[in-house]
Image 1 (cartoon, rainbow, N blue to C red):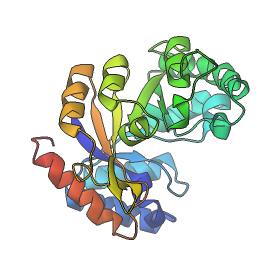
Image 2 (image 1 turned 90 degrees about the vertical axis):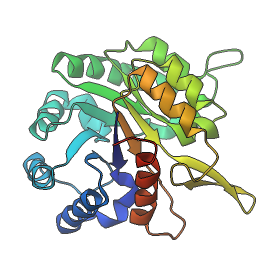
Image 3 (image 1 turned 30 degrees about the vertical axis):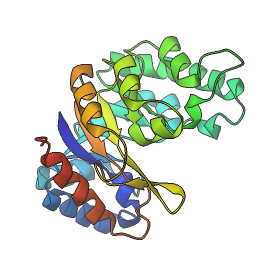
Image 4 (image 1 turned 180 degrees about the vertical axis):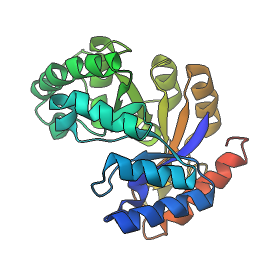
Length: 255
């Protein structure tokens, strides 16, 4: 397994191409060699490839424009292949299931064929969870994440499981990694701390989530990339937060 960075953590430092390039340099200087491109300014595939090659970085996965994934699928795959990225990510379902099954059915209608086509072209569609997918589809029914795993084949959809949001939704990250074994090639490592009466995001191994068990489960489940993410650093320098996570994971023998 390789450790990497979800660039959404440093989104405020990627608002133009010049800053984006400098941010990639800072990430490489910490020691990371893998990134997820998400929350950045617009870029051309050739530009991103040049920056990654220059710094010895690899883009494992993106969070891409979800409309383009659905309606311009072939071109999206071609763009990812230009910068050597296998996994095409959906960061969030439209409307965050505010309309319940109506939203889910529309997601299914659009992304089941997109996932199938992406697989045919040699890449893989990935879905990133938040907490809202842990709501039930109806009284006595499965939760939405379970339904997604049932309705999409492993070839059509993988899961970029987010440890923090699983726990926030009332789930057990280890159990979900085991349940989705073979479909969690990418996992977001994000810790949860409790401070001043509130739960907070924290650098990995500086909160209360059991990451020793998570790493063991990921290894068994076939996870390839462990991507550090911290949506909110509460005024701390996000690069320093990413450095803490990197050092803590390196201390566990990961690279």
